[in-house]
Image (cartoon, rainbow, N blue to C red; front, side, top):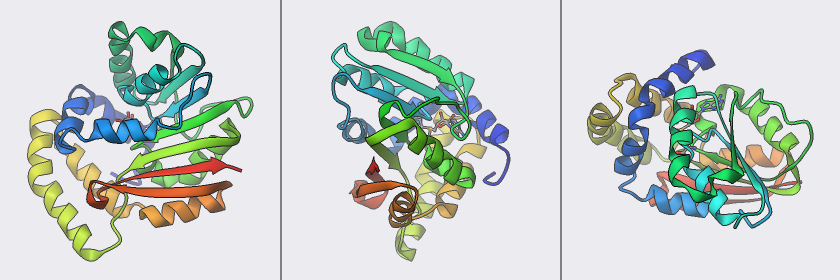
Length: 234
Ligand SMILES: C[S@@+](CC[C@H](N)C(=O)[O-])C[C@H]1O[C@@H](n2cnc3c(N)ncnc32)[C@H](O)[C@@H]1O
């Protein structure tokens, strides 16, 4: 599936959208709420925030809460089904007036000037690994100098035993839970493949430094299964 067109990946996210939140809660044992709070810790009142690959909008909503009524959040995603779910959640969120939803591809959405103070990428970069240079260039162009990039993702583990453990987990508990929640057998195969072909967290930090970011910091969460990376646009 990796290496296949963006439209195949978009269809996959469209088809799994209905079960995505439940899948996320189960597969992370509910810890994703803590990780999401860490990812939006950089958001302060008055900021302009871009949530790239917003999915069902969790990071966008958390960011809007942190703006305390001042600023804006733009949630971008290429999956119309994911965006529809995000928009539905707006009914229950009093801060949602600060959020704008935009359908677009991470490598080709248009930002006329560096206007964002923070860009969030929750579990997006692995999905755009075939065009990661273009995506990082878009992010760099969209961030003002000094702005923050905050990334959550599952990276390829450094050590063979961690890779083996992750594969085993995906093929047992992950597959079972994906069958129950996502109802698309391609989904878990896609997750496994996307992780095994992706960069390690350290390689991603090195890439960020080559692509115009500095002060890169990398924090391991969930015993190294998930990482939070943060970097400043130079
Ligand atoms: C794993 S979900 C993460 C959603 C959310 N950010 C979160 O933290 O739960 C990845 C999201 O990125 C979107 N996505 C994947 N590739 C994309 C691309 N090339 N352009 C825009 N969105 C993309 C998918 O549609 C999906 O909603």
